Length: 108
Image (cartoon, rainbow, N blue to C red; front, side):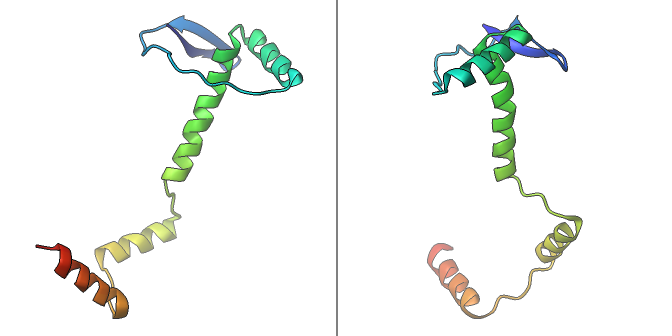
């Protein structure tokens, strides 16, 4: 199996490593111009088009997932959140009634 590592900021190098077998495919529809551009960039780095694409797309995918799954609060918002968690306000009205019904039904 071939893996990727960064030799320096300008070079991607393939090396062997033990990793799960690559038995899935991802196909992209691109224009001839886009394909040529990607192939040229991969050739400049000395790697395959697949390796080049994965090297650049995987970190972006991880970042996109992370930005959707993680909530980053300002210091003010963090302090407010922690304050409410440590000293929750008294429940009132419909929320209190609904919570009481839920607890009566499901807390056994």
